[in-house]
Length: 257
Image 1 (cartoon, rainbow, N blue to C red):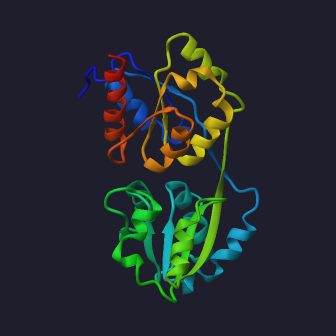
Image 2: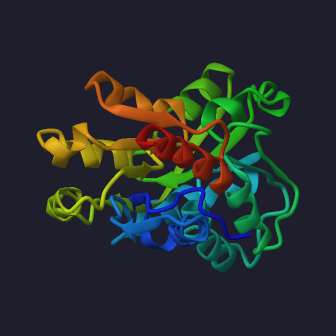
């Protein structure tokens, strides 16, 4: 239902283009004005030979953990091509519900996911992730992801194999577009949905005056850590999902009130 919760609030959305549509639609529905400014782009690998080598042991593995929807999209077609189907021996886990939904498109419906926060720590806290001694766990992710999942599982006695199947790049070379919007009174908040996107933003904009005057809205306390160290204005959502982000953005309206 349309309303004016975000009336005339100008918001830059830094998610990858193919992941930004739902939040942009929600912002428009509530009277806000979104601008796309992706700070991450997902790209296939130029060479999948290492990935193909890594999954040779998949039929002997116990768990397949998927970090993101991108991990599913960039791995499952190759797995199915190699084995003719998804290996029946595997149990599946995903960081969040969107990733689980993506797995369902490949016929995988019994997927372990965290119940509240969708991150590595929440997945590791589940009972099923405690008893992994001598189990082989595949982690499907992009190149250079966080290691907390693998490190913790190894400490619990698991044999961990990375299957890196995509890479993340920063499509932006400067933040002139955001600076111009702010100078025109058309930038109040910036949504940042990953730590890597935040690092990309700060590397380009940390010396920019406008960054001190807008609010960064993030969906996890970990993403807030670095900008808070620089004394920037940061709001953290109370939960995952677009509805929680809209509620977070509404606080910016109140602050401007």
